[in-house]
Amino acid sequence: MATTTTPRANNTAFEPFEKRSPTVFPKLEEVEQRKRRWCSPKVWAIVLMVVGSLTAILGILYGTALPAYVNSAVDDEVVHCSDSDVSKQSYVDPYGDCDDCSPYYVSVYMLNATNAEDYLATNAKLQVREMGPYVYRRREIKMDVSLSDDASTVTYKTYTYHTFVVDQSCDGCSESDEIVSFDTGYFSVIAATGGEYNLLKAVAQSSFLANKSLSVVNEVDFILVRIRN
Image 1 (cartoon, rainbow, N blue to C red):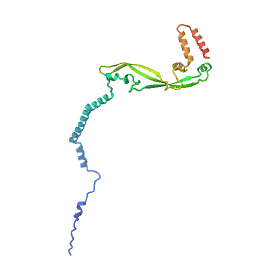
Image 2 (image 1 turned 45 degrees about the vertical axis):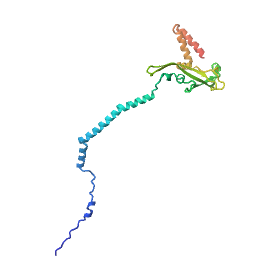
Image 3 (image 1 turned 120 degrees about the horizontal axis):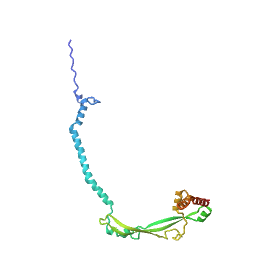
Image 4 (image 1 turned 180 degrees about the vertical axis):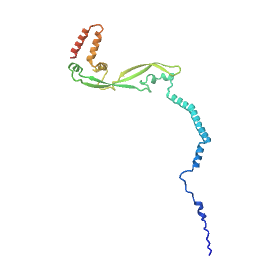
């Protein structure tokens, strides 16, 4: 008995939708092609042309635009004077009474030692009291003002003085007030020599060492010790 087999029909409807499984690693041929592509002289020529063009553009900007910008910024900051400018009242007397002037006031506070005699005589505790403010108006006038030929330099002399302002000073304060204060310069010298005794000793020795004998120097030391005690 003969048997026949029916040929299996191929399902061609799904063939267009079949996809190949992706490969995780690229083929060796693809890697070599990419290397050859980046290492080709044509690619390097294009890269060098782009870099050269950018360098040329930056050089042109640096040589033309940047100096012009710097010069413009400097010109904006520099003041150019003329004869009319240096003769203005606001320039000659900036702290004066003109419309463009700005009055300048100085406030002074003083420490007054109220028991200076007792402090020196009996070594009592020093009592001080702050006095002020004593307000003075400053005037700073430019004289003999002259401008150079190229208008780059102004030369002048300055005369400065202060005027006491009563209505802005403390109540009852006047220029004739007597204030007992400290001689800061003398205190600085004392601190530098290590005390008042050392200062007096140095002054006395310098006065006698040149022409006197050692006995005179010892006598000076004895006198200073008595003064100290």
